[in-house]
Structures are given as structure tokens and as C-alpha cells.
Image (cartoon, rainbow, N blue to C red):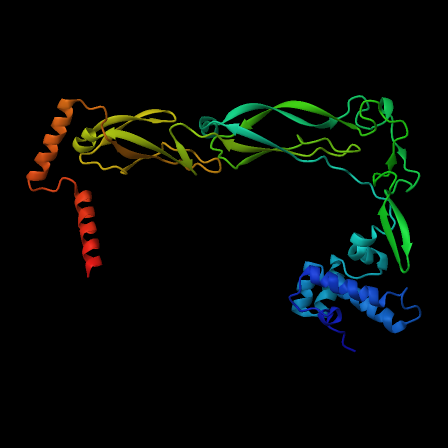
Length: 376
């Protein structure tokens, strides 16, 4: 007699996810469980079929063999030493599916309470972020109590086994068909109970303190990056491992430069004479000054790119550029003679028949056309 298809047994599609397979098995296991159907051979058969289907379809290797060769593939995979169904007890697989609701089948558990992760906001100058630095920080956190060596017991003794749960950390409650496990109310799941608490930490095994540490900032970090310091978070409870410290980077606003990824930007004011006649001026970079040649007839908004004068990426060897945007500055505080010279220059440019201000002329032409179109 041909065996039923495993996907049909569980009532799922052939591309069902592991979560969907687990949900389907949970439903069938509750329906055909032998304790709910005493003496019912048909229910027992359905239950065994569902168990076999679940074991195969939740194992990636077994499922691949089954999808390709059917039952023969799955059986061949099992006979080759890759597992298989075997005579394993029902409780093993039942616990794996229902353990998140009903606990671990009554077995005593050793719970480890890892310390909390911490966050520290570190503000850097642009220079520190670009070139890297080592910064000392002082972090408030829970640390292991030195008086009791983190045990919570006076003079460093050992905690006693919880009398309520017997060290399991959980207590079992019977609710009809199901046996439900809950966290022990006396030891709060630790399985241990402090009868003679430490006077420094009051049995907690931890005290609040401030720790000074050095943070090595790698070159090229930017605002929003974070640095992980493993084991520098809060101490764990009941001797558990410490958490981690995450240092979040914030970069202060710079007086001259702004940063976008690996490029730096700055504005360079120049006089109208330099803009018209051209010239050479010094511009700052983060590692010194460089000479910038300004060509004749340079307009406001012209951007000059200085290759390799930006930031080296923290994640690669990519080196950004410095982009200098020119701003032509209008002269102020002119005396009478200077004003007359500018007026004479303006008159000379307006009567020689050449367009000395092409953007102004094109803008005026556009304005004229705009008003002419409105009259139509």
C-alpha cells in the first residue's frame, strides 16, 4: 500500500515554510494525541504519520531528498546515517513544537541572565572622525559586586537551591489535558535562592558604578556609525555574561567644511576682480593648505574639485574629494573715488556693444518674453 504524501498529511503546500509546517503539525498533534484518544488505533496512526511528516519536512536535507525521490529518497537518506525517524520518543518532538508554550517537558533548566547592552553617545570633531582618535569615556553601569564576587551571598558563599522549584526555575501547573510550566515566583526563574544576602548589593550580585574606558575611534567614521565594545555592557545577573556597549558617533558641525559620505564641501569667497581677471588663492584642507587657480570670468557657484582631499572611508580605501564652491563677493564700504570707478566701468561695459553679463542679459530676455506672452 502506497504511503500518503507528507505534504497532504500535514495539509500544507509543497512550498510551505517551516513555520507553516510547524503550525500544521501542532494542530494535528493536539487532535490525534494518544492521551486525548485512548484506545483509538486510527488516531494513533494519524498521529504517527503526522510525526513522520514533520520530522522529514523540517529537516532541510531530508526534505530535499523527499522532494526529489519521494519516500524512497527520505528512507535512503535515513539509512545512510543522516538521522531518520527511528524509535525516538514522542516527547522529544512534541517538546520541540510545544516547548515555547508548555516549557521543556519538566526538565530542570539552567537559565543564564545576560547583562543589558548599553548605549553611549560620543560627540567628535570632524578632525577626530576623519583621522581617528582614542577617547576616554566614563559610563555608568551595573558591575559585578566585589564584596560577594557576584554571587549575591554574604562573604561570597553560594546561593541555595530554590525550595519551591527544586532548582528547575519553573513550576508545573495542571490545567485539564495540558501540563503548563510557569516561571517560579520565588526565584524568578534562576533556580537559586539567596538566604543570606550580601550587604553591599542586597543579594543582587551587582552594584551601580562608573567605569572609565578608552574608545579607539577608527579613521573615517561618520555620524550615525557605532562602535561595539564587547563585554563592556552591564554585568549579568546570577553570574551571567555581561552585555555589550555600543558607542554611537555624532560629529560636531565644522566652521568651514561639511561632509557628505567621503566628500568634503566648503565655500570660497573671492573678490569680483579675481573672478573677472582670474588669479590664485590658498584654500584650506584638513591636512594643510593647497593652491587653487581661479580662471578668468569665474561665476558664483562654480565648483572646483580637489582630488583626494576628502575623507578616507572607514569601510574601504576609497578616498573622497574636496569640492570648493566659489562665491563672488560684492565690495562694501567704498569711498567716493571707488564708486566713481565702478560707475565708469559700468558705463564702459554698457556702451561697447558686448555682453559682459550673459546671465543677466538672458534673464532679462526671459522676463521680457514672459510679459509679452501674458499680453497675448
